[in-house]
Image 1: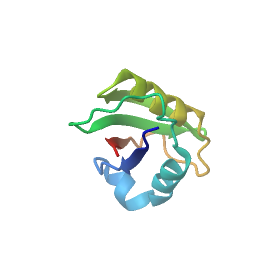
Image 2: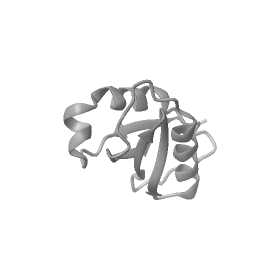
Image 3: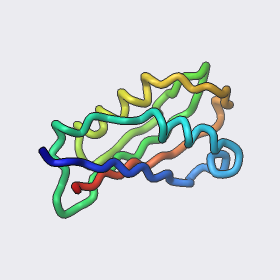
Length: 104
């Protein structure tokens, strides 16, 4: 069985993310672990999912999500929506993350 490596890369597109909320980054990195065993990753190009969201009432609310494969978009979306964020964040803060996937 092929092994897949999930590399989580954070886009620092939001000023609030980089300077004020490193704990949110840690929560995302530690809790997003999608099962990639059924996903066929592109051998020559890096697969990705880019998501914009805000946090309200300790839950992630997705504003926009795009990616290279619908299966990856669905996996990441489900993982994020199931999370409970420990720290309160202003609903005015928008966070942007990029998840990249490579075939190993």
